[in-house]
Every structure is written in C-alpha cells, then in structure tokens.
Image (cartoon, rainbow, N blue to C red; front, side):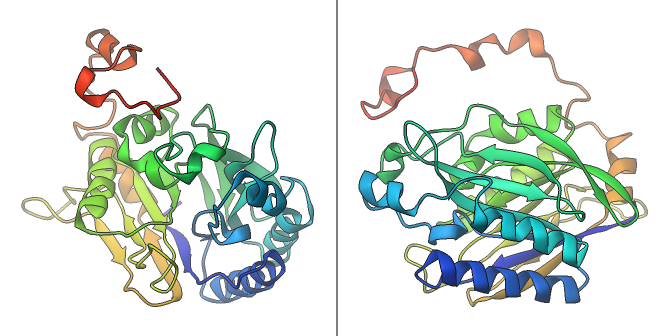
Amino acid sequence: MKTFSVALLQLLPTGSAEGNLEKGLEACRRAAAMGADLALFPEMWSCGYRIESPAQLAGDAVEADGPFVSAFAREARALSMAIGVTFLERYAPAPRNALRLFDRTGAPVLSYAKCHTCDFGEERFLTPGDAFPTARLAARDGELTVGAMICYDREFPESARLLMLGGAELILVPNACPMEINRLSQLRARSYENMTCIATCNYPLGQPDCNGHSSAFDGIAYREGDSGSRDTLVLEAGEEEGIYLACFPVEALRRYRAHEVHGDAFRRPSLYAPLVRAEKLPVFDRKDCRFR
C-alpha cells in the first residue's frame, strides 16, 4: 500500500438523528467522489454531540446494529469505501460514546467506545469503554492496521501508545472541542512519538464549543532525502464546514518505522510499573474521577 486517504467530514449536525443520517450519507458520497479510502465523522455524529441529562441521552441513544449505524454499512458497501461512523450507543447501565468502522465491503472491522470520558462534565452520565482495540482494514491496494481514540482520549499518551503497541499505523480521532494550539500539539506529539498516522475530525465553527481545524499528521519526522526534521502535519482545516481529504504515505511510514528510534524500538517496559499504579498524587485527586 503506497498511500491511504481519509476524508474528514467537518460537518454541522442538523438537530435530529434523521437529518444527521441523511446529511452523513450524502457527505460519504461526496468523499467517495473525491477518491477517499475512508470517511470519518466527528464525535457522536448521531446526536451531534448533545449531552444534557441521563433522560435525554437515553432517548437519543441508538443501537450499534440498528438502522442508523447499519445505513452506513450499506453505504460503505455501495461506495466501496470504508466509513468510520460515530454515535451515541444504547448500552447498559448508560449509553456509550462510540465509533464503528466498516470496511469497503460494509463489514464491521472495529468497534470502539471512548475510554477517557470527561467525568468532570456531562460525560459522567456515559459508560466508558474499557480497551483500545486495533484491526486490519483492507483498502483498494492493500491493508493497514487502524485504531481509534475519541477526543479527550488524545490527552493521555497511554491511549496512542496502546494503539501503537497493538500495531496501529493509523489512529482515527473523532472530536468535539476547540482545537487550539495545545490540542493540536498533543496530536502532533502522539503521531511523532509513536510513528503513527493520526486523522482527527472535529465539528466546524457553529457547533457549540467547536471551531473546526480537523487535522492529519503522518508521523514521519525525518523524510528520506531531506536534511533535518520536518513538520508531520499533512492537513489542517479551517473553521468552516467542509470535507477535507488527507493523504497518508503508508509505504513511506513503514520504511521509516523499520529504522527510526521512536515507537517501540527502544522502550524499557520493566521501568514503567508506576504508570499503572492506582494511587494518585494528592494534587491530582479529583472527587469526580470514577477510576482510582
């Protein structure tokens, strides 16, 4: 596989699941016409990232195999293009912030639920995920390994690290927050330190607390034939609504991974036991943290 292209669907929601379904399917068709291998939605597209109360969440939640999500499986097959659709998943004891990735035949290859829910806010009403799975995704001219982390997940280096250790060459990041210099820097760092492509899709300006700036990083800090380092940024969208196509150099990334020093090349896992300790430093102890 020489390259792999991801269409970042930086869209405004319509205010209803039915409207989001129709608008989302049309955006996928436009992405396919642009030559995308995969179309990615912003966070919780089924409800436009609306979180108000447990009752509202229960009412807006959709089944992972229900009509809303299944429509994107059919569209993936019809377009021969992978689709990463995001949705508020009906789940017990409370809904989940979820992504399902369908390959170009419409088969589900990856299911993920946001692990690091924002428990300092309304996301405390959600059920967190419990793993960072990866999967092989077949494209037109080969396969690559993909994984996902959703919005606040990106603020924990462990998220991308676990995905890299699971073989991820591309990490999909649905998002719903202001993408300013520090959050973009987090994504740049996650890509650089793991030698991993990262595709982030955010809502545009006009969605509350969002500002566009969907982005893509290819993880290649030192390119063959160049002197010195380079910016790994492939694409940064503006604030406005639109579909933005990012092309990732997969073949070049694999060559780069085979000789560079980042990722898993020189790690010393025997030193890292404190990373999984349950105790928190007192300064970071928060009463609304569900996990200790």
